[in-house]
Length: 105
Image (cartoon, rainbow, N blue to C red; front, side, top):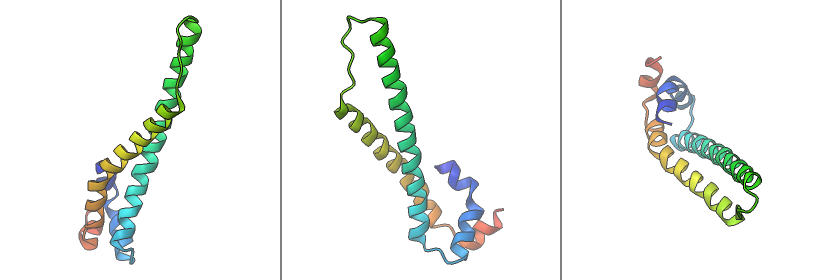
């Protein structure tokens, strides 16, 4: 997210110059962080469940299960981490001076 803010400085400056409130910019970047972390969490869960099922096929005597509670908790942790990792970059994006941000391009 820090890189996303740095790469999109001109876009943020344009949004603020056109009248977007700082809270809107903050919500935009926090939303992006949450969506990216949710997608990453789902991808990780899919890979983990696939590997667990492959292990179950390879070793039929081994009891392999993926409890629903663990799936929900794993996705929740991914969302919280994404939100936490997005707070500082989103705050920095919301505080950018529009003139300086547009000049950076």
